[in-house]
Each structure stands twice: as structure tokens, then as C-alpha cells.
Length: 457
Image 1 (tube, one colour):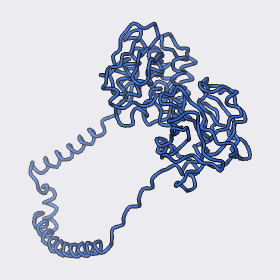
Image 2: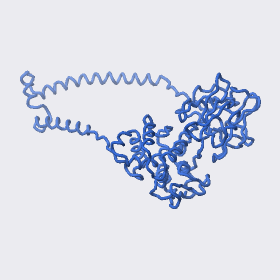
Image 3: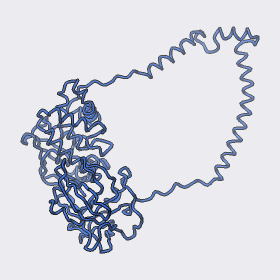
Image 4: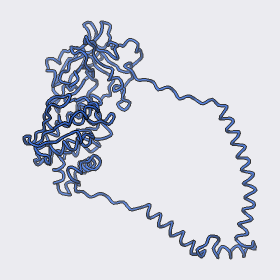
């Protein structure tokens, strides 16, 4: 399902309509610099006007196009990321390419603001040490993309001054945190806004220059022996005469004559071989590359289920952890970002659809083995379950007329199979869940939601 704080990417036209005014406490404050950094990375600096006058640590966008009034650094930063105009960049930078990415980016945005703060106050060393440990095996705090997301930019803005204030020995000890800060600063423009992090970089010798010098020295030595002219050295000429073979030049000329005859024979043979090879290639019909199979909803393993147990995620205040009976030997544990939309009572006992072939893995240290399918309005203020009809049994697979075939065993994130299907997953005017207009069907009838004309994720 969709996660909290998800803001859909805007069209490029949305940026050019009118400037977006962001009110901060001061342009040089932590909040002001974070806003400037996010707008720069999103490529929308010209469309964003930063003004002062907000309370300390506050960030406000009034009447944002397609979003209304927005408050808070995390919310405003994610909105600015959604304005990115480069193809696919809004979803990637904003962390909304998949539900898993959305959940992780949302959590790190919340942690950045609550744990590290935006007021510029000192940060306890144990918190910086915990962040350093988190980055031990990661390039970015929310490791969901090949580049930094808005979660990295906001977190960087919150901790950059604190890391810069550490002693050199302490920064060296926190090598993962320092490396990450240096990367965000150098590769994503943080140095231009927050200043370059004071640190020593390794200096590597100019290996290419050494080899050039060696080569020049060898050439100069040979030329000196020859008196600055091409041809054999005096020692080479003396050696040739002692052997009774005339001059070195004579040997060279004789050898060239013999080589010329052999070269001609070899050239004729090579020419004949090439002609024969070309003839054989013409006779062989070229192989056509196999047609690329289009990904459709048949790859998704969607099953009917019932939430039998639900509890709060111990490390994330916007996530539920639930057990869902999908007709297997034991319930599946699933982590869902529904705390902002569903109470524990509404979760427990709910009949739902569960996507069962997402890649299993921990979400904030809690194992998740599926994804609850939900419908959401465009601005993600209302979310509700996609519900199977009365009589559909737990474990029954949802089918789609005209899209027969067995689902893949695992939806590999790199292949982006779910993302290929997602744009066509919507409810129709009657609230019936559909893929490209084809209903989600069970033996008891179609599945539906209370939300009509809504996205399904």
C-alpha cells in the first residue's frame, strides 16, 4: 500500500506555472539551507522563492500547486523533490518508486527532524555513532536508489554542522558518517551551501606522469647514441661488420626484400580467406533477437487474506506490523504504512488482498513478507483497503481476464515489474479494482474499494 507523506511527482508544467514560495526562519539557518539544497538537486531553484519570517525551525509552503498548505521541513522538502523535471527524477528523488522505498524514505525524513533536529543544536555523540553504524554497509541512509534521495539531503542538512564541529580524530573514527557527508557535499552540491567538510583526502602519485618520464628518457638516450638521427647505432654497425655481413643497413635491406616476398604471399592468402569468409557469412541468415516480453499483471501473485493480528511497529510510529492469513500453514508477517489511516481495531479482522511475491526483507528491522493492496486518492489524504467479495476464501488467487499465466516467484526490485504494472492499477467509477480496465476477480466476484477513480498500490 502507499506510505505516509507520499507526494505524487508533478508534471514539468506544474513548475513553470508560477514560483513556489517557501517561508523559513532564515535563509542561512539549517532549514533555509536544506530547502535551497533540495531545490538545487531537484533542478527547480529558479521556480522556488525562499523568504524569511517563519518561526525558528519552521518551514511553510502556502497554497502549493496540487498540494495546498504544507508545513514541516520533511513535508516541504518532499514536495520540492516532487517538482523535479528530469524524466523519472521526481519519483526517484522523492523515494516514491515503490511502497518499500516510500516507507524507508518517510522514516528517515521523520528521524532526521526528530532525532537530529533542524534548530542547529548540538547532537549527542551516541546519535552520530548510531548513524555511522547504519552507514557501515550503505551508500545512502535510505538505500533505495543509485543516488541520494530527499531523505539523504534532509538528514545531511540536519547533521552537517555537527559533523563539521567534531575533532579530526573523532571524524576519522566516524569514518562511515564522514564519508557519506563528504559524498553528499561533493556529488550533490552540499559543499556549495553548507561549506566543504574539513577532512584530509588521500593523495595518489601521478603514475601516468612517471611512465611518460621513463619513456622520454629512453628515447632521448637512443637518439644521443645515434647522433640525433634515425638508423643503427655505431655499436650495431660494428657488430654487423664483424660478422662479415656488410653494413647493418645492408642486412636490413636484404631482410626487407625477403620479407616483401613472404608478405605478398601471405597477403594473397589472407585476401582469399577473407573472400571465403564473407561468402559464408552472406549464406547464413541473420538471427533475429528474441522479442522482449511485455510485463503485465499476470506476474503479480495477489491473494485473498484476513488480518488476524496487528501491533505497532516498535521502531516506527507510522507503521503497523500485522499477521495475514493467506491460506498457508501459518500467517504471513507484513509491515504496512497505515498507522495514519487505520486504527488497530480497523486493521484486525479486515478482509484484504495481499501481494505475496514481493521480495521478503526487513522494514526497520521487522520482517515483511507481503504488501497489503490499498486504494489512495491523488494527494494521499485518504487510503482504504481493496476488499475481496463475501465468500472468497483466504488464499484464493486473484485473476484477470485475458492475462492468464503463472506469477513470477519473486518480484525482483531491479526488474521493476510491479512498477511496470502500477500505472494501470486503479479503481473505476464504481470502486471496482481494475488492471487497465479489467477487474480483480475471484470465484465470488470482483474486488472493490470505497474509493472510486483511485490509485492502487
